[in-house]
Image: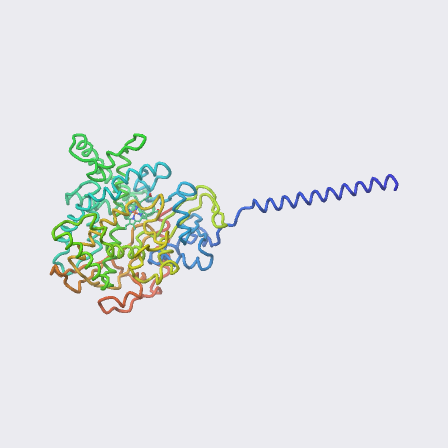
Amino acid sequence: MTLAEAINNQRALFLGAGILLLSIIFQLWRSSSRRSSPLPLPPGSYGLPFFGETLQFLYTQRRNLSWTFVDDRVSVYGEIFKTHLFGVPTVLFSNPAGNKMIFTSENKLCHVAWPPSIVNVLGKRALIALTGDEAKSLRKALMTFLRPEALQVYTGRVNKSAQSFLEENWRGRSEVKVFPLLKRFIFRIACELLMSRYNRQEQEMLEKPFSTMVHGQMQLPIRLPGTRYSKAIVAANLLRSQFQLWIEERKRDLASGKGLPDDDMLSCLLTYVSENGTPLSDEDIKDNILLMLFAGHDTSTLVTALALRYLALNPDIFDAVYRENKEILEEKGHGKPLSWADIQKMKLSWRVVQETLRLQPPSQGSFRKVIQTFEYNGFRIPNAWKLYWSVNSTHRNAKYFEEPDKFDPSRFEGAGPAPCTFVPFGGGARMCPGNEFARMVIMVLLHHIVIHFSWTLVDPHEIITVGCSLRPKVLSEKSFKPSSITDSGSQMHGSCIGLSTQPTAMPSISRSQTSLTRHVLREQGQPLTHLSLLEGALECAQEMNLLAW
Ligand code: HEM
């Protein structure tokens, strides 16, 4: 071999080795980059530009068919899917594991995220506006009033008010409109238990601004004179000014030993001191009284009204509930007020309410904001996206509830539904803190109504629509009549929740229940084709813009 050939061979060798080395490096880089490449996003569609899938979301919510939005997509993409709602990419979880993940991830992977329009009206110190330690600490303060041991004391007061309310507004009437009446009663109870305002004039004085506030916070957040949103802000400030006067009055009373710390929520909050020795500010107290009034009002009213409706549609269950309540009454002796312990004995009555909450949950679900990118079930969930857990997607799923459209309180016997399938109050750190309060008020009312009256529906075709917040949208109200007389001897004409006379809504009660009604019913099911698509879309578009997330 000549020298030149040897050099050439060496060059070829170096070249070959270099190529080999480069290809090894390239392979290593490829496999490492494959390993570190991000996981896929969940499947799903972002829908239309700008609107996303918000119109479809609101459209099904308004028609009280929110689970169909979820079911349609689950059948295509699976139980976790992405969508685009209120201007933000959103991952929707529709199974118990997804619910559990959201409930247990507060402040770790995500935190609660309410529409700014609602937060602005209720105030920056309201619990729903706070996250992390601030939320934890405030929740602790609110629980001094809402915890079951404290509520026991208030049962007697609710009992007394319920009796006088029914006496004044129901007895002897041939027909009553239940939903507005219950609304008034629950507002009255809130004024009494939150701030000890027993005076009817004072309660009525608060009602108007309260209603302006509730309606306006669901509107376009434009602060121009005359807009509903502006009126809501003004109304909320008016209420705050009134609360401020009562706060000062109460501070004086407490200082002079006139009041007790657990007299009502106002006193509980005024005497609360956190672990590090800080009391709540007046702003904390005012914003959270507003929040309590708002969060507990339509929700409890709706559930009570609908439970009465289901009882009218299911006479056998009504009879059993009546017997249960009568036994409790006989056991304790007539004339004695209902106590917290009696409420614990109302097992079937509570199952009726639970089944009502399953079929018609006042809250349809809620949003969270992702605070750090994370992986879930092989998918990447990016930072700043929203998460949504939907109450109805498990409540109406045959996998977890056999014959899901059937009203059947016996599902709640024994161990009841599987964990994270029945979630009307949410779960985890942001679970509704008012659930026991709501239970107490609803059960006391139900007891007195069942014991003294029986009823049938005037219009069994009533339609319930739901806004996209806690507050159900009731389009109009009709009443329902009694068909029989109970042992009280008085014939009660009850009425139910507001009914929609608009042909744009779907019936809310499933066909399977019609056979159980006491009346011969017309065929239910005004078809969805009655709905003008344009009208529906405009309504929803309006609502979407108004909420302005
Ligand atoms: C049947 C009646 C009620 C139902 C179905 C209900 C349901 C709910 C739901 C689903 C949430 C949201 C949970 C989440 O974001 O994950 C919530 C939050 C809340 N509820 Fe209720 N609620 C009811 C009654 C009440 C009552 C009577 C009060 C107060 C007296 C109340 C006070 C609150 C508050 C303060 C929050 C915010 C909690 C937070 O952000 O940490 N609720 N409720």
